[in-house]
Image (cartoon, rainbow, N blue to C red; front, side):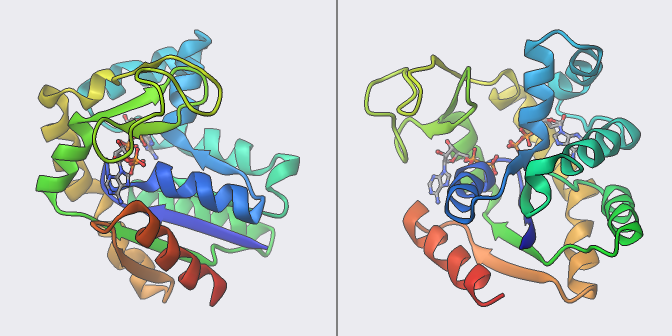
Length: 216
Ligand code: ADP
Ligand code: ADP
């Protein structure tokens, strides 16, 4: 039973690694960006509200985001733990999560920071494509699909996210450093932070993540 947070800048490899952890530990992978994009695809109010922020590379307001996550983690499949990817992204979100868990005598077990330099993040985001149906990420050079433009897992069409285009990426990295990086200290002061060098091969990062998780 583990509640894990994957922390890291856009493009650090959170989604790639969270998918493997979710499969191996049989706990749900809860990615706020995926939830917003799915809501947008379904044309819900939540999706339409999030779109304006996502397009600019800004954060969706905390109240909307926190409400969405608290609802998701209260679902049946999250009773045996979960891996959060892309949440919390502000200290305010981290505090709101802690308080909501505390009410049920629960807490986060581990916050893992996947650390990658800005230069490499830009290279990863510019080559990333994701599946239109399951949102699995690929990379044109580092992690290409077996057949160009097609998801290995479900045959869905791959596309480049609008916010992965160069004009938005700079702002997203700035937002990360201003609003999300303070969470590193937040989790460090709780004694929950572990850092991993995310600039290694996908398989090496995966192995080191499991070393940390298995030690828990
Ligand atoms: P990445 O995988 O590149 O880090 P995400 O898919 O997690 O990007 O997020 C895409 C966008 O969704 C963000 O730029 C932001 O607009 C919105 N978003 C995702 N998670 C959060 C969050 N926890 N708080 C506020 N906005 C969020
Ligand atoms: P995040 O969810 O943190 O935004 P992703 O998991 O979507 O990041 O990965 C960003 C891009 O980098 C994707 O194109 C992915 O295939 C690629 N990638 C992920 N991990 C690595 C790695 N360790 N080395 C090289 N490329 C990677």
